[in-house]
Length: 81
Image (cartoon, rainbow, N blue to C red):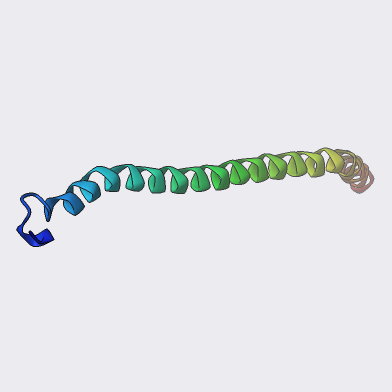
C-alpha cells in the first residue's frame, strides 16, 4: 500500500497543524505583548523623569518669581510718590 491509500494518512499533517498552530499563535502573541509592555514601561519611566525635571525647573524659578514681585512692588511704590 502507498501512503495515499492508507486510511487517515492525509489527516496526520492536518491534525499536527491543528494541535501545534494555536500554541504557536499564543506564543507569538505573548511575545508581542511582552515587547509592547516593555515599551509601555519605558514610556511611563520617561514620563516620570519629565515630571521630575519640570518640577525641578519650577522649583528653581521660585527665587526669580519672588525677585520679580519685589521689583514690581518697588516700582509701584516709586510711581506713587
